[in-house]
Each structure stands twice: as C-alpha cells, then as structure tokens.
Image (cartoon, rainbow over all chains, first blue to last red):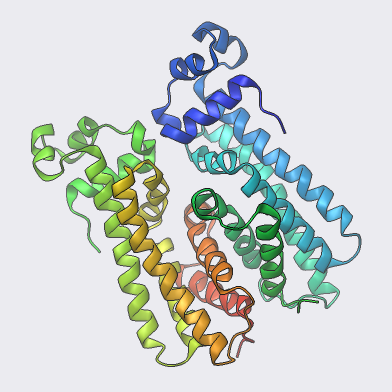
Length: 189
Length: 189
C-alpha cells in the first residue's frame, strides 16, 4: 500500500507529535504544498487522520481475508495465516499501525466508521476460533476474549518492534503464529 | 495509587489531547493553580509526563513483584498471579495505562529511564517463563517472544476495555491469566 505524499507527510507529523500536536500548516510545509491546496484534498486535520486510519484498517482487513482464504478449510492454518498477515503489517508499517492509537481523537462518527472496520478484523479471527472449536481442532473456553488477546498482542508490536526488534518481520510473524496456535490449544507440528 | 491534583489534571489533559496537544497553561487551569505554581513542582510539561509514566510503571512493577512472590515456587501460579496483577492495573487505571503510549515523546534520557522500569516488568515475566521451562512445567520455544506477546496482549487492554468491556476487572484478569497459561503450554486445572 503506497501512501499519497500528503498522507505520508501527515503520518510522519502525527507519529512524531501526535494528532493534536501536529498542525495542518506543518503538514503542508512538509509535503511542499500550500495550506489551501491541502484543504482542497482533505477538509480538515481530522480528515487526514480519518483517511490514514481507514486506509490502514482496510488494508489489514483485505490482507487478513486473503490470508484466511489461503488457509482453506483448516482452522489451524487459517489462524496462522491471519496472524502472520497482521504481524507483517505491524512490522512492515509500524508507523501507520502506531498512529492508529490516535484514533481515539476522532469525532464520534469517524470513530464509529473506524471501529466498524476494526470489528471486521475481530470478527474474522473470532469466526476462525469458533470454526476451530466446532471442528474440535481448537480448545478455547471464551472465543471472544481469546480473539481480543490475539489481536492485542499483535497491536502491541509497533511499540517495541521499531526500536528493539532483532528479528526480521517474517521471523516475528512465524513466532506469533506459533504463539496464537498455543492460545487456541493447537499443538505445533 | 493516588495521584496528586496536578498529576491527575495532567493525566486527563494528556489522555484527551495527547502530550503535544495539551498545554501547561491548560493543566494549571484544570487544577486551579497558576502556571508559575505548577512550574514550582514540575519543571516542564515533559516533567509531568515523566512523573506519570514513572509512577505508572513503578506501580505495575511493585504489584507484579508482590504477585510473583505470592506464587511461591510454582511457575504456573506465579504467571497467573503476575498476569492478573498487570491486567487489573490496565482495567483499573485504563487512562494512566493509555497515557504510557505517549512515552515515545519523552526525551531520550527520560525515555531510557522509563524503559528501564518497563524492562524490569519484562524481566520478571521472562524469569518466570524460564523457571517454568526449567521445571518442565512450561513448554515454551522462545521465552523472550512469548513474554512480549503476554505483555503485549495486556498492554492492548486499555484500547478496548474502557468502551467495550462487559466483564468486570476480576473476570478479565482471570481470563487473561488462563490465556497466558495456554501460551506457555500449561493445561488449566
């Protein structure tokens, strides 16, 4: 996923100073356009954050669905694939993932749209966990809570990966897929 | 852990607007003191964030150590206790935990101090995982990565708990302790 120059500059500014700390003037300056030119594309600073969080979550959702499909009818493979896809997203675009933390500053309407896409990712994983339980491939007491825990450990990656990661993205993805398998009670092959 | 009025106001301001979005003037206004009076206690806005993140992490560290001790020599109980203690901290003081995300805006020196305390929590859990492996109570391939995954799923709690949690803090803590046990390969009793 390639970001446009304006969104790329907004991402850098939000990452470095937070949503409230970054100004539209500064974002326009970074990208080398005038403030009115920027407003021609995005109606407000919030419009930039909306665009970034939506792009970001939709991109994860698309990748997660593709990874799920590649796992065919095997819940264990589906879960490994989806967790790997999400982790690769976190390591690959750590800044974008980190800026999702700023989503709490969105207006209630924009936050609701953002939450709907996030819910899509949650429901995808929840569906896999339930399918695995049903097929006796998994042993999960509370599918909803385990789903949140799996997504939670992935969401936390941008906090440490950038500065401390000694492993490459693929290696981290493989390790998290293994950990997620344990969380649902699958023994590793 | 009780916060002083100034730190409590700073926490609210940082939570609502982010570190860069909040101003010292506004924090002073919230608490009803003058800006010079605030500067008498904290030398800068960063000083407030330093105080909050240090208080927050030290508090978790203290609780986690106490929980660890209560588990005596049983790695499985130690892990359950420590995870419960951390989760209770996240649900109990979700705002404070959320503001830790702003730690990335600290100066390198302050960030390093903050990281040292966080490292203490990581090392505590890592020690338990290694002890469990050594005692054949756990079955963990990569203790460091599993430790991060356990702490990561806990860190993500403030993102959803406040708005969506239907479970009480104790129930969430118990569920996360169970999930962490699975992550280290312990069958639940």
